[in-house]
Each structure stands twice: as C-alpha cells, then as structure tokens.
Image (cartoon, rainbow, N blue to C red; front, side):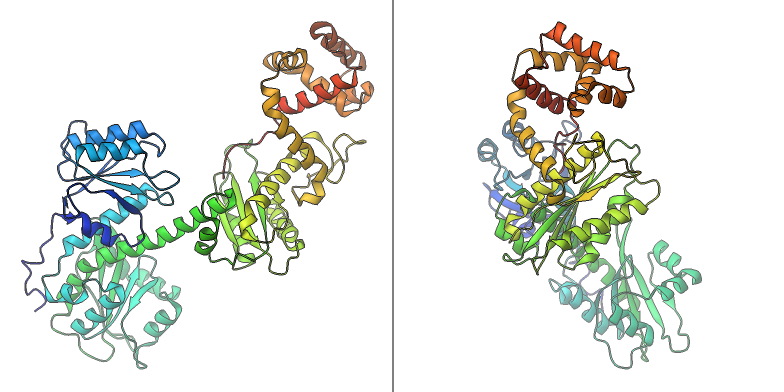
Length: 568
C-alpha cells in the first residue's frame, strides 16, 4: 500500500546545516563558519529583525537590512541573533564573496554558524531555497512512493507515479508547461503526444478545460479530479500541487487504454505532496539561472569580476566581436510607461539568439555579438529600436546609442561606456537644438519635428569628445573658486537668468542679436545682462581665456550633459 510506513514519513520539523548545504545546488549560500559542526539542527527561518525580543531558538536568521560593506552593523546583527538563540545567520557577501572580518569575528565569538549569500543572488532566492529545503525535510521518505522517488527529481517522480497508477504521467507548472513526463508509447492519445512534443498543453486544450470548469475545480480543490473518457481522449485523473495556499502546478494521469490501479488516487495525492519541494527547486533553479546570468552580464558590462567566468556563464565565446547598445528613456515624463523598454528588450532579443539584454528602471543595455565584425549591424539594430520606440503611442522619448565594435566580450565595458556617451550626446544636442552630424553652435540649428534619437560614436564624435573633456575637468571645477565659479553658483541659486543668457551668447559665437532672438529678448536687454556679469562679478567676456572658462562653467553647471550616475 502507498500509505505503508506513513508514520515514519510524517513531516519533520528540522533540517541540519549539512542537509541545507547539500540541497543548495546553485550555491546561493556559502558556509563561512560552523563552530558547532554541520549537524546542527535548524527549525525555521527569520527574515530581518522580527518582533524585537522574540527568541530565535534554532532558527536561521537572514540579516537583510545591512549592506555587505557595513561590517560593524552586520557584526552587531550577528551578535543579537546569537543572543536570541539563532542556530545560523546569513549575511550578504561583499564583492569578493566574503563577509567583513568583524562579522566573522562576531560569529566565532558567539558560536553561531555563519553563511554568506552570493553576490549574484538576492534575498528572494535565499528564502525560496530555504523554503524548498525545509519542504524536502517535511516530505520524508518513510513510505514506499516517497522512498522510490527520494533524490531523483521530477523525471523519476513521473516514472514512479506512472508505475503506481498504471498510467501515463505529466507534471506541469501553472502555465501548463511540461516539467517532466513518464515514457510515452506510440499509442498515446493525440493530446498527450502534442503536449509532450510541444512542451506545453495546447492553447485550445487549455481553453476547453477552462470552459468545462475542470480548471476551476482543480485550482480550488485539494482532491483528485476525475475526467471521464471522451472518444479518443482517455480517462484522466489530475491533482494540484500545493505549498500551503500557493499552487505550484499539477500532475496529470492518463489511462491510455488501461484501467487505473486501485491505489491511483492515493498515489496521486501522495505524489502531489512529494512533488512540492521538487517544483520549488525547479522554480528556484530557473530564477537562479536568470539572476546568475543577469549578474554576470552586469559585471561584464562594468568590467568587474572574473570577466572570463562571466562570458562562460553567458554562453559566449571570448573571441566573439561585439557592440554594446544603450537605450535610455526620458525621465522628465511622468508617469513613465514601462512597456517601451519591455518592447525594445523583446525586439533586441529576437535580433540574434546570442544577444544578451539587461533591463533596469530607465535603461536597457544590449550586448550584441557581431560574428562578421560589421559594426553596421549595430547601427541597423539601433535604427530598428528607434523606429519601434517612435511607433509606440504615449511612450516617453527613448535615446539609443551604439558603442564601438570591440574584438571580444572581455572589452564590453569599453563599448558600453562609449554607448552611454553617445546617448548623452544625443540628448545634449537635442536640448541645444543642434542637428546630429554638426558641432553644437556651428551655424543656425536645423529644425526637426523629431530629433534624431539613435546614433553610433562616429555620428556624434565631436560632442562625445566634448563630454569626455567635461567629465575630466568636472572634479577640478567642483573644487575651483574664483569669479566665474562664484557667478555661476550664485546665479543658478537665483534662477539661472545670467547662465541662460551666457549660454545663448556663447552658442551664438558672441552674436548678440542672434543670441537675443533665441532667448526671445530685445538685444539691448541681453547687452544689459552681459554688463551685469562684468560689473557685478568682474568677468571680462572680451578675454579669450575667460570666455573658455565661462563656456566650460556653464556647460558643467547646467547639468544637461551630466552623467546620471544610475544603472550599471
């Protein structure tokens, strides 16, 4: 009988540190210190500082509110958890993966086990992994079915349950994607064949199950649901896989010309219990793989960490030429729809299978492999993304820059840095009314209904060069004194009237009538403001060195070309 030995398989309340680490196949946690050995028992999870003063006896405590670099704060959190009886403490690892020395010292001093969370993972991954580990412990292996499945994964589960039920089995997630299935005979019904071959239940079949009410019954019942045979569609049994109140998936049994075993319903109920940790593990693995790839891509684009390891994690070849593109949405529009960057991400991913995309709050970064070394492919993708962004109604402006072609993903950070500069250059030129391909302020600006919002480094080379100079002199300017510095800061604090006037005057190469026209002022009004600059601050605009310093000052102070400091 399936229930044989049920008492031995009753849910356990504990999991040892050794079991926890063995279950953590993705390496979310790393053991730093275990003063009481790895057989210490853990009985639950505490997230952050819950209920001040509440005992933490035997629990694993996640120190979520302290950054990896805050050694003193994390050390105090470790001591507090130990005082309250914690069995283990998890802290966020630093860039090198190790906690700060004072945190390790605090754990050694208090005798509590210390684990470090991997930098690529997040606390959600950690909680999900711990939840699944405790679920595995709770399942037990005392009955025959659980013992036959133990440690085998979803494929073994499907095979074992098929034997117990005398049926064909599929294990599916909540989106009806097939996670595992038992052996399929050539005589299997057409729906099963289509489901196995396509990796998911056909849409028409899902719609049919929804209309019939079977799905509603499945998601709301904890019992095994029966569906009678209908023509070529054999008799079926199905049960939902639940973790508490959360539905994780379902197990489907098809009779396929045979009769179900007398224990089929009981076997499916037990299988649904045993399947819980396996589905949690599957979901965690999918999430962990995605997050690990995202971490590797972010680090690669920053030029940080082991770049060769990152390339391997992303499935790229180190000798593959590539270009990085950056798409940045206009932050001045509120509220800002998210669908614009989402659509661009999908379009970029569809361009080539090896494309890697990193989405952030306001920025999309695309690593585009270019096997033939033709950088025109990157410009074509930038143009394609720009066209898509422009076609989206009510979406904010999106600026798209392509960096230079580099010979390897190892140099992706250089291409990304240039792509960011191209985006800044495009925004700067649009704000200043200059047409791409012409230096800012050179001649009358070309008027466009819509500014060009995509480019490569060659198309905005002069503006990019200026931005590099401005970035280099910015630290010096911010510590600089003198009349020009004092004038710019004082005027910006008062509203910026003089700075705007000086910007227009310098952009017009000292042509007062043209500058006044751009400001919608009378030329005499502009001349009066320029005299105020001379009389109040002692700034001589006839001196070429002074004009150069003022030009740099107003460009640095107005902020239109300033790096955002956000994102990667």
